[in-house]
Length: 480
Ligand SMILES: [Zn+2]
Image (cartoon, rainbow, N blue to C red):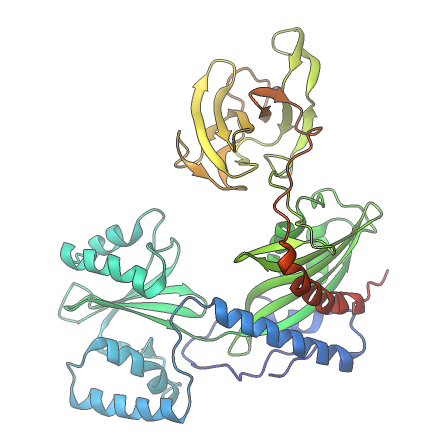
């Protein structure tokens, strides 16, 4: 695989099929600008190649979806046999037809009537989009598929994809005989490079087809002039990187209040399909300089989970996020204050975060919902239990998030409700209360438990991994 630090995409060694044409947003621009300050292309290229191989190996292991056979002479033979067979036996099993598709498509790649291994001229083709909370059952029911088939397809979905539901907002293609209403095949575009064919005739079946993405390791550097968003934009980088950066360093860097002169460097993966950029892969390493502090983050697999650790292998995430709302300012701290509504001095047993009405409120740690209810003073509030020691409470919500009710398990960072001004409140804010052994404490002064450290047995692997990423980070220059 060819890798170039100047931003050329891999030239299609892993490319399989041509029927997809996904236009990358700002693809061209990015190619030129993604790595604005690189030098020493030769050594860099070698290191990248080494790293690239590791990344590719990892990607392979992680692949959950069924892989299709590489396009090759064998593939071509299968395709030829497949096509011949199709001509001779029109009522061929549709799964086989789907499998033969990729090869067949290569031979007729100019034909816009061919997609997913089907000749669209033989069908009435309809497009749809999966709807929020509709799921596979309701989706299929809306197309008048019989109940027994739906039950069977529900089971097969898990087998084929590892998932037990369809995701909302995905493209669906329905193929039916011109003379009939009920579709024979439904194609669900799971990701940019994979789709699922649901065969709706007896016997029903699901086929998962995935195309390999080429993964290229890239690097970038930014000097903050005003905001992070502007720097990302000015450097022609993809916004997805911001989310990745937050994932890695949100417990150490306040991304919403950066200062001019702060800087960062990134080593990350870009994913290509047919030489077109379709997305960002892993953020492998990050260096951030802010408030005169140098912070490093390295992605590392720990006990089957991808985590970010610092240069000494300590997890960067605490088990609690510091604030229940992003973009918020603290309008009142924990302690005594004059209460604007009650008009008297009163102990304030929480921290107020002012934010616009409707701003999502997130769970600061994994937990179980204890309460999601209205009370006179608290308004709409949610209380979470995180463990035997800690509980947190979020007051004055305009409304609860979908599904938030006593007993619901929530994940750290999950939206549990929305900022409002219900109960005893003068304006939209969330009063955040932190309970330790059932006593309310100032969470900003609390020494919160750290996430679990890397096991000693992982340290040697980590050191090797860290040094390879670090070498790449060190070579990136940030110019003033
Ligand atoms: Zn408050």
